[in-house]
Image 1 (cartoon, rainbow, N blue to C red):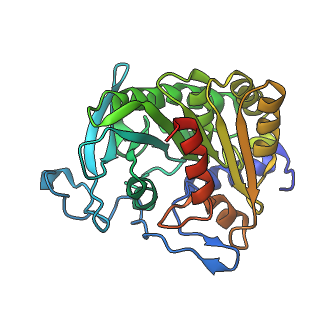
Image 2: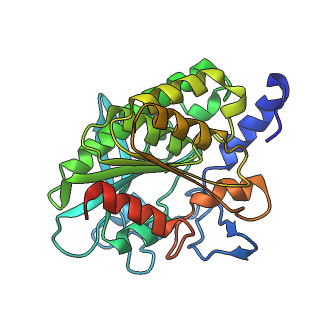
Image 3: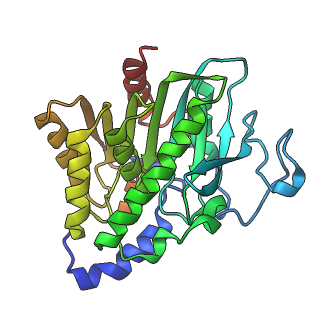
Amino acid sequence: MSIHSRAAVRPLVALLLLAAGCQAPSTSGSAARSAPAAPPGEAARSPAPPGEPASSSAPAASGDLSPELVTYASGSLTLHGFLYRPPGPGAFPAIVFNHGSEPLPGWKPDQAQFYVRHGFVLFLPHRRGQGRSRDAGPSINGLDGTSPAFVDALVAQSDDVMAAVAYVAALPEVDRTRIAVAGCSLGGIESLLAAERGTDLVAAIDFAGAAITWANNPPLQDRMKLAARNARVPVFFLQAENDYDTAPSRVLSEEMKRSGKPMRVHIFPPNGSTPRQGHGFCMGGEHPAWGDEVLAFLAEAMHR
């Protein structure tokens, strides 16, 4: 990624932060990967899944996968998210998946298609200011992505992530000794911040965290390096080679390595032909390019 001047990059950062939340289908190499198409934001709503009141405007099932719209507390804030459960009584391992910058993160059936069908409870919390939690605080998208205030907002949102982890840990069908976080773009940053805190977690997966803002936000670089050095659980850094900037994965994994912290890093071959498609490498589905390595990482961390 070429280095833009601070003045020139701000409009680009603002645009990409709104558009690049791993929402659009992406391609792997020259062949398109099959994943369920996300609705445009949450504008087109489907009938409620079984057991969900129709007035809640929750999504319909994706195949045999049906999420429940739930409420959880983050301090004094009331937040919302979508919860998927595998069939059966459990106790199941769990993934808290952190969305990116998209204003309406939705219910991410592509992630459910991967994680739930591999036996994980999947929780998709909507952080303050976004999606179903948009009334709980200002949107991070209103901030300059190159500013210290942007970093402060990410750190504040990490409280929402840890509250989501605590919510999942209290579910009777979840094995609280086998909970991990994962996330894409801003959600990757949040996953690393969660790894630093560590409570109720055994692992974190950072897809392309800070790939858009890294080069032009030194305070964010410093904060993520600190989180990497202080990480209390193993972290897996993943990106496609044609993402906007692969420096975050390379630098942060090296930071952990020097600190003697367990980590993995893999820069995969190009995903599609553009940086935006590269940034969308985190898309799930039945057989994502990253699937086997993520499952192996989780199996080691969770001793499955």
